[in-house]
Image (spheres, rainbow, N blue to C red):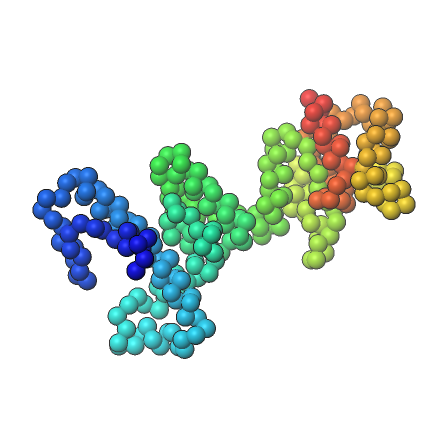
Length: 271
């Protein structure tokens, strides 16, 4: 056993399989430290168990028969399988020391980016209050994220929606993903329903007259729009304020788009 692991075990008194005999001269401070050690062991044990079970997945035969045999004196099959499920969902580098194994279990079904967001939230609450959010609160947060994902929301879309709700102008794309839907479908649908969508493609007044590759590279046509077209369109410049807090929809995002310049102007001068 490494020093790091043994350091988690209570150091005072005598530990056996059936109990813990504490010394009679144990001070209150030492008693508190011992309780803290127990908590660390409890949290670590689930990770240890899950990593152990996952390790044997491809090399040690019928694990289910092993743990259900009369000779087995360890955790039940489902306990081992559940622990391994969480461990496989989180590489060691993504596991949070201050967040319990149970909290990790609540978010294990989410995609990595969304799961990490919830764990970040748990860590922030712990840093602010000294307590983790309840498992029920975490479960409700996970349900909310799953609802967003079912509607096609991605983390990038959610972040831009939050900006728009604060009055910031953002850019979205109508370009289709592999499923045939616009990559920003959820954001665009939400903005359209809320009256916050403005199309800026070439079929609109805001479109970029410069095209790739005929008029240059992506950077060149965006620069030409910003420097040699828009400054000479007072009819558009006087309407920049109308773009404040809107979702500007074109075909380019997340690649550079002339809409990035429009959004910048709206955010700086649109008040």
